[in-house]
Image 1 (cartoon, rainbow over the protein chains, first blue to last red):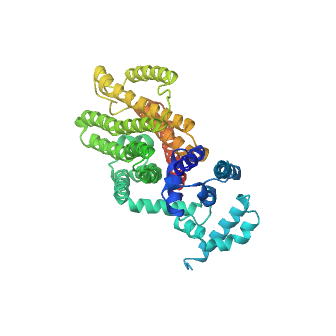
Image 2: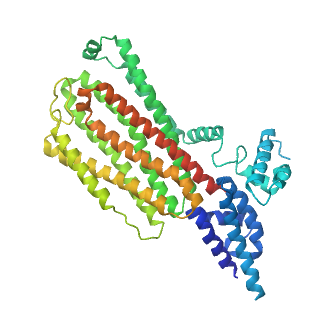
Image 3: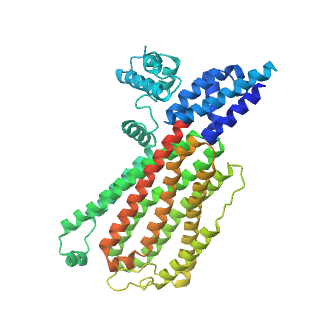
Length: 87
Length: 377
């Protein structure tokens, strides 16, 4: 799975939770905490990204189900990537 | 180690406990790990975002008050302008020459009348302050989104809300001035009344126009085909417009004072009342109502359940400001008729509407704060 597509998938999933703020949110986390350009986001960055997303989103919502669902969907991206690589 | 305060570390500990409770994969480990978080990358991240304190969606009131004061200091020109208008309004209440007919009618002294004026002015000033703070939160949020499509839309809406905000104190001060001038120079009452009506119209019109344009731009960010115009809303407004025009032209005091009143409402021929007052008013009110509909439609259609929850307060707040200003102007345009029936009821109604406008601005501030928090993460 190419980096650009990982970023786009992450942003598409994030849009279901943060709407118009999704792109800006992911860009900030990738640039500030993963120290790379957002389009360089790869499947190997997902665990760290998910950790930061969990902490950040936990500040703006009290609903643990939403946080769990969001992070689970993000972790599915790296799972699918591993499956694709194995095939 | 950051020696900023025990409070910060305590706040971080609480935040860690909260993560332990909320973050299901951490469970009890979160409680034990909390002090470690304080000095970890995550702890420094949280401190850098000024998120220490009561880490929840509804943050501590003290932090909001502190931030509101910071906003008032940062935007000192607006704060100073409001302070000056509040002072002028207070002085008008205290120093205005009492109308002898009112003193006689209510059997009170000039000092008592001034105290009543002060009691009337004080809540107005508090409401203006709340509204100014609410606007500044919205403005700050719009500024934080500069360069983005939804940011541009919120910036235009914020400009509209600004005009509605300044209308409140400016119209009150101008109204007081016109009353004083009318008493000092009775032959010029007609001129001042006409000018005041147009002044109010011109002050509010940009507010509704900007709010409408901003709301259209907001809908434009959704990239969806949406029904911009509601047939039912348009029909309902046409019915209201007909009724409003009928009531306005039925007002016996529209051209000359009637009964106990010392001034007429418009001092204009009916054709000029319709063309230059009623039609522009109705157009601006329709734009305002349409803006409310667009903003609530955006709230309904936009993706992102966390974003929507944060947007709720802002959308209802802006909607409330627009709707209650329209209702207030509507009531004020019939003030002469209503005052003749029951002055006390009219004053109560105006106060209730002003309080609702202030409450709407509180919602604007709450919503803007929550949305800004998302942009700070």
